[in-house]
Image 1 (cartoon, one colour):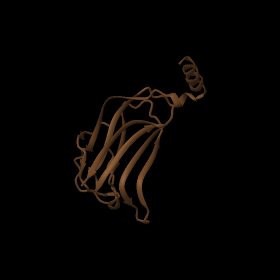
Image 2 (cartoon, rainbow, N blue to C red):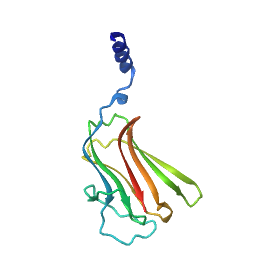
Image 3 (spheres, rainbow, N blue to C red):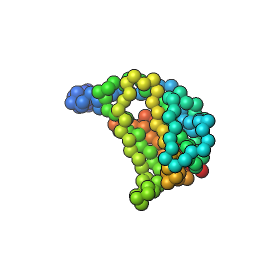
Image 4 (cartoon, rainbow, N blue to C red):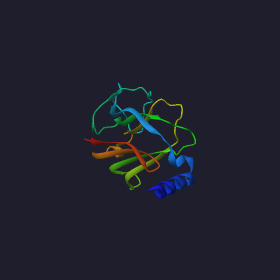
Length: 154
C-alpha cells in the first residue's frame, strides 16, 4: 500500500498544477428558463441581459424564438492559470442553413476569476435553432464533470 501511495504522489508531482485544480461548485445550481418581459422576438434578435436575471426553474422549455435557458452556478477556487471550462451542449440535431447537422456544440470558456456566478445558457435567436427534443447541458473542467442538466424543448 505504501508503494502505491508513493507512486500516486510521484505521479501527481509530475502533473501540471492546472490538472489538479480544486475548482468546485458551491451552493445550488439554478436551472431553467431565463425570464424576460420582451415577448415578440424576430430572427437574429438578441436581448442584452443581466447576470441576476430571474430563472424559472423548469426542465421544459418553449420551442420559440427568444427562449433562453440554461444553468447559473457559483465556482469556488478559481484561478486564472487553471484549465478553462468546457461547456458541452448536446442537441437533438440543429441543422444550420448550410445543411450541416450539429448534435453537439462545444465552447471553451476561460475561468472568470472575479465573477460571483457563471452561466451556461442557450438562446434561440434563429428559427433553425428551435429544435424540439432533449437538450443536455454539461459543464466540465478538464475531464471533471461539474454540473449537468437536461431540458425538453417543446
